[in-house]
Image 1 (cartoon, rainbow, N blue to C red):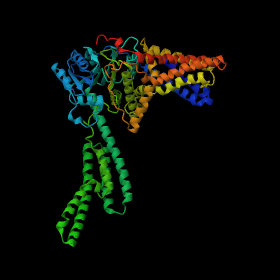
Image 2: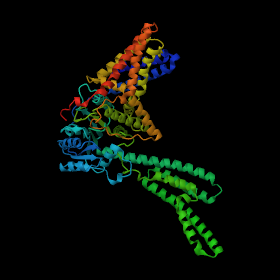
Image 3: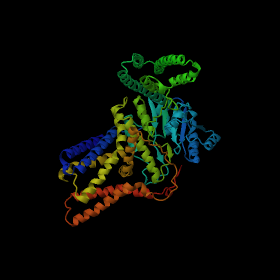
Image 4: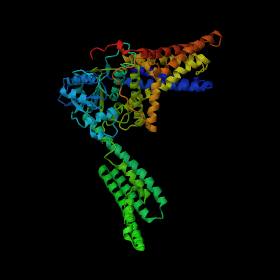
Length: 638
C-alpha cells in the first residue's frame, strides 16, 4: 500500500506541475485556470487520502477488561416516533454489561416518560436553567445529561440506532489504556437495499478512512454508536470554560484600554475625570498581572468589578453632593424648600441611572465588565463538554479531546443497526447538516492551527473538511468538456503525448490506490455522490461562512426517521443537476453536428465525449435517487 501511495503522489505531482508550467491555454484562461485549480484541489485530496492510508490501522478484538466500570447508555431523541425510541431504549436496556439506560428526551414528552418509566428506563429532560437560553440542539441535550448522570463511561446512541447486546463487552476493553477517551464503532443501516441508491452505508468512510485516521490517532466521534470516557469529557469542558473565559477577559481588557485612551484625550482638562480614568487603568493593570501570575480568575474578576463599582460610586457621590449644594442654594433664593423636594428626589434618581452618568468613559468600561463575568450567565450551564460551535457536535469535540492529549479508537465492527434516510429530501437534509457542521468547525477552529494536535492529526481532520470543498471543483469538471464540445473552447494547449504520458499513469495508479485501500468495499456510489451533490456542498460552505463570519442563522434540522408523506418524485430538489445533465446531453448533440460540418476532428473531441459520458454515468444516480421508493425494501432484523 505504501508503495502505491508513493507512486500515486509522484505521478500526481509530476502531472500537476506540468499542467501549471506547460499546458494551460492562457487564451481561454477563464476556464483553463479554474480547471487546473480544480485538478490541483483533487491532487491535494488524493495526497491527504494517501497520507491516511500510510498508517491504516486494522484493529481486532479489544483487550480484556480487567476491572468493572460503570456505564450510562444515553439514547438521544427530540421528535422521533415513540415506538422507534422505545425500541432502541429496550435494546439498550438489554445490553449485557451492567449499566444504566437513559432516554434524553429533548422534546420533553410526557407520553414518552410514561412509557419509559413503566419499563424501568430513566428519562432526562432539560432543567429550567435552559429556559430562554441557547439550547445547542443535540450537543446541549448531551451536555445537560452529563451533569445529571454519573457513569464512568457513556455510550451515545441516536434514537434509531439499536445496539447489540454485546456492544459494551466488545468495546470497553480499549479503555484499559487510560489515555483513551473515545471508541467509535461503525454506523450501519438495515433499511438500505443492496444497490444503496441514496449512498447511505458509506462503507469507505466507516472502514478504511476511519481506520486511516485511527493510525494517526485521529479517528473521530460520529455522533452515535460511540463510547466516551466521562473524565476526559469533564476535563475538556473545564479546560474549554477556562480558556473561553480567559479569552473573553483579555479581549475585554484590550477593548477597555482603547476606551480609556480615547477618554483621556477628550478630558485632559478635567482632573476629576482624569483621576477616575487612572483608577480604572490601574485596575486593568492589576487584572492583567493577576492573569499572568495564574491567580484564580473568579477572584480577579470579582475584585476588578468591585473597583469599577467604587469608581462609579465615587463619581456619583460627587455629583449628588454637587446637586444637593445647588438645590440648597436654589431653595435659599426661593425661600420654599418644600417646593423643590420632588425635584431633589428626581435628580437623585436620575443620577442612579446609567444613561445619565457624568462620565461616559467609565460607563463604557463598566459595559465591558460583562466580559469579565466568569459565571457565563448567558448559558444554561458554565461547563459544556460537547462542542457547541456547529450544528454537529461530534468532530469538534473529538478534535478538542485530541488537542488535550487523549487518544481515540476506531473499532471496525457493526455493533448497532440504524435507519438511513428513506427518500431524497431526508437524505439531502442530512448531508447538508453534516457538511455545514464540518465547515463551521473549519471556519471557527481550523485544525491546521490548533494547539495540541500533531501534524498528522491536523492533516487528518483537515482532509475531512477539505473534501467538502469539492462542490466548486465539480462545477469546473462538468463545465470544461461541455464548453469544448459545444464551442471548441480548449482549456489545455493540446491533447498531446505529453498529456497522456503524465495523466494516464496518475489516473490509473490513483484508482488502484482507492481499490487497494477499499479492500473489496464498494466505492462507486460514494464517488457518484461526491460529484453529483455539488449544489449541497456549495450551499454548505457558503451558508457556514455566512453563519461564522456574518452571524446569519443556520438552524438545526433533525434528520427525519420516517419517510415523507409526500410520495411524488421531488425533481425540484435536483434542478441544478438536471440542468447540468441537460447541458451535457446537448453538448453531445452539438459535437455531432460539428463533426458533420468538419468543425471537430482529432482526438480532443473523443476525449471530451468520454469525459461527458463518464459524468453522465456519475449523475445518473440522481435520477435513481429521485425515483427511489423505500417501500420497495423492507428492513429485516430491526
